[in-house]
Length: 139
Image 1 (cartoon, rainbow, N blue to C red):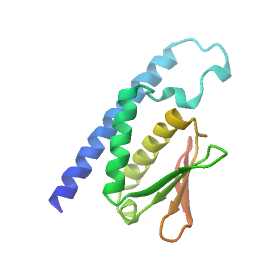
Image 2: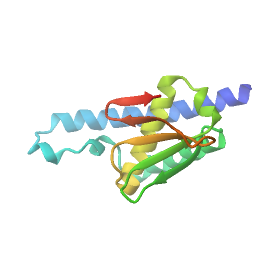
Image 3: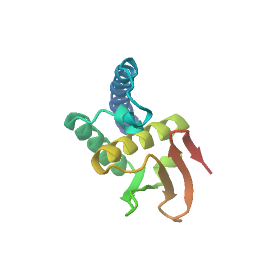
Image 4: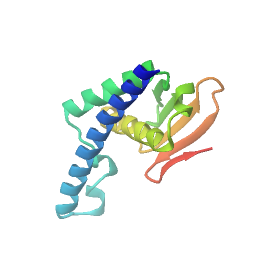
């Protein structure tokens, strides 16, 4: 039990680091003049560096090992589907939101997916919620 708490804490620290880096990038973008409304896309706030992507990939692998995420799929229409396992339900709401946001950032950079995630329970295959610019909405 203690080792799970240590692993979870390490995951949260890594994710907080990524979020802080993204917040710095958003601040830098906000300080720059905007040439047109279409020139600033939502995903540009994410750190697109290879180092950030490697860290996100490491965290996604850990989430799969920790019984939180079962699978992540990208549809032909570039929609992102995340299938969650039982460990996902034991997380605090903010932890769920942070993890799903980080997964979205990874796939927006890697696959240029649309900025919405649909969540499914891997056992029932039922839609359990969505994550978008409006936040995490669970059913």
